[in-house]
Length: 227
Length: 160
Image (cartoon, rainbow over all chains, first blue to last red; front, side, top):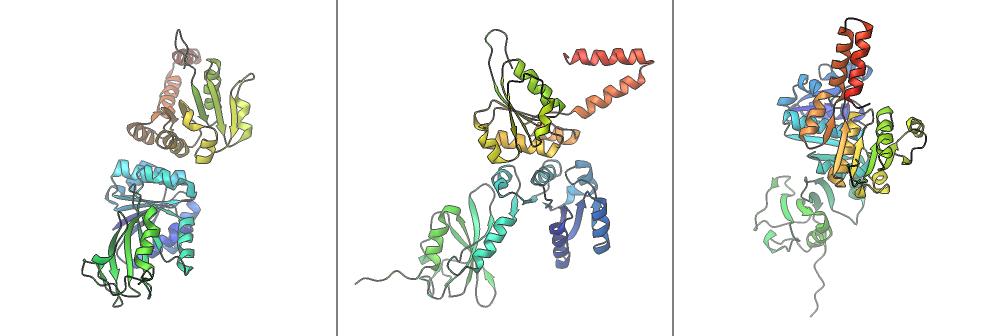
């Protein structure tokens, strides 16, 4: 895939390195500070270009029309927004990703055709939540516009769903189990017959409001029986 | 904003109190509209004329809380005229798509971005092309008097 990264700061540079390390992507960083361009060039030659990533002429030179993704990670939300919008509107880039510096802007970006938003605050929250023993549901990604999100969780030993087939689980409204990774490390799309085991990793799609019910459905212990 | 016979007073927010923003604020205020001028730099309000009756607010127009605090939902018009194109179009889109302000207008210096956001439903103007063409006419005038006459004509066209 061809990925254009707008903004050659710490985030952009690290992202470029990670993507290049995958060995499957062509990467270009667009940075408007000439000094930074020289600096990045010493580290990663041939993958950096001087220019304003919000300008159509610059994006055209960067080959934006054949880019599979544009990722805007500057420190200014207005620049990230416009860069994504120009990429979408003028060059039909299929996926645009924006870093959000001010968490208040998440709603705006989602309304204004940015496909994916990444906010450092949310990411840090996810990491903190991952460390907390009581809250096992990790928000992974919000899906554009729908109010749906992708969450990850691990089935606890004492969960009510251990040993049960997927069809027997009462999932909340608009929630589906999308993927199950068992102890063999193989990811599979579950059918109704798939049996869940303790320590299975599950990726599910759910409404934000249904998160708690989903957690209850998959992770809570069986209800106490009264005879 | 006033109409002949039966004036309609509008509530207007102008983001960016540079020379253009301030001049627009003064015009709209003189016509009897309720004008609020927003700028991140309190020193910018010096461009407003003496006797300006509108409100000045120090704050950033791309900050949702700032916009909410000044009652953006009840405004009739939002204008963004800061030096930053991206700030201008982001603020305009917030005003239009988040808060539903009926009339939203922005100045955008980059002609390509100006056209793009116009096609996306914003009201925009691009001063760059007009001004470069006008400057060209002035330098091509046979002498200074002719150049000044052309300049006076431009002012007359703009109703100044």
